[in-house]
Length: 238
View 1: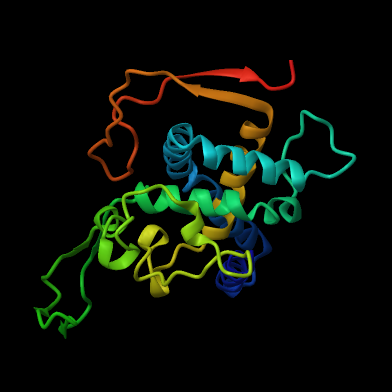
View 2: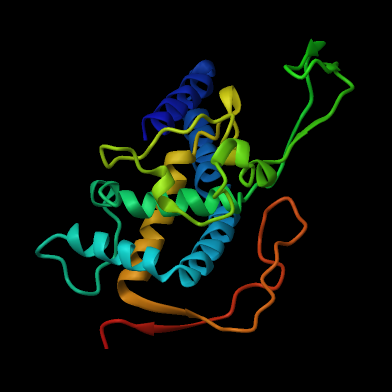
């Protein structure tokens, strides 16, 4: 949330240059709408892959359910909707599982960059303003040199530190939210929203993925499932 707060302060500072309160309000509203809605399709795509992955890995789903129940407030109703940021912050294993899903199926499967001046890459290749560099985050997420020989496995534990928190991974290895000065300012907001949806769904519903589906990524700027995901939903509290 600190990054988002800093981003909004920057927007206010820039928008307030003309001294007009009306201009400040309009600029702030426009940028808030960008922060909230720019991640709509990306969050939806990632959650689709996430529910498919945990359906293939019931041990992971059970660990998420246990974590949710352990951190549920004593006075919470069985049909609980997760919306409290502090409450969501306790769901470390769920955060790890979402990160792992994002590693295997990054919603932005590639990034395109153009140098603003001549440079030499670490590989020794010379680039200039006419060079287009494509970074494939999908391939990087499945690279054994970065993630180990088990890189194709869905393993949320790889994101957990020895102290039980979230392990820091350098953004140049995990490009889901870009890297450096181009890092997505809505990263924390995206995780809060996805954790809220995932926790509420898993706590309140059984999501049963139907067999016999052809699960393949679409060829597009956002890594969605080409044929969608068919599932049956039933309440846990009937």
